[in-house]
Amino acid sequence: MKIISQNDKNAIKIAVDFLKNNKIISLATDTIYGLAVDASSKIAVDALYDFKKRQKSKPIAIFLPNLAMAKEIFVFDEISQKIAKIFLPGALTLILKKRQNSKIKLAKNLNNNDGFLGFRIIKNDFITKLLNEFGGAIAVTSANISGDKNAVFFDEIIKNLKPDLAIDGGISHEKIPSTIVKIADGKLTILREGAISSNTINSSVK
Image (cartoon, rainbow, N blue to C red; front, side, top):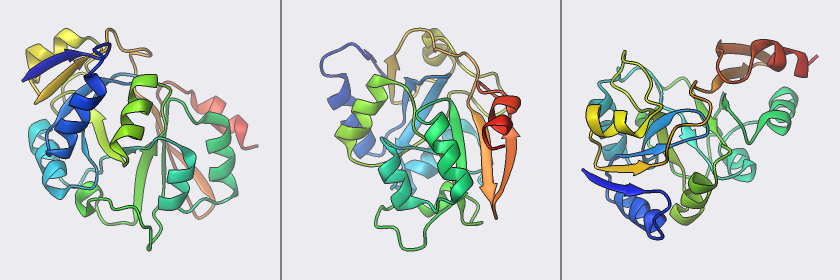
């Protein structure tokens, strides 16, 4: 396990190198700490599932640098466009149907083959810079073994997880995970209430 600070001038380059070599990195997001890999690599995604001891039937969301890339991957309807405009970037995971002919490569083992996938565009300068430098999507899940509590302190990462690269980002911002919203057939469903309340989500689409 290599340990660096996100304030290190070479942190972005080091993180990109690890991602491109199918390694698992941990990093502070705008909510809690996450574990991340190259979202286009089946090998890396499999490694993330195994490392986290996560059931393969449970999808893993992706982080994207901007809404333009999201629209190249996902089908947006009126509701999803409105939700995205209000809450992104922010503490929201939006699950939408994937486009069949997207030019952006994603590993097929990210989801359970129902055609939907979650994505985030987050408020975090370090990760935004990382995504822009990496040039693609990263698959990110909470930094914990499945069933354990979410990590909000860096010390929890180096004590309990020991990924290939651990990036110290201090105390995570919200300390609770993102709110997960799925939009299918024009219907909005809140799958998990997190940093954004259900009332805030629901009132935004009325």
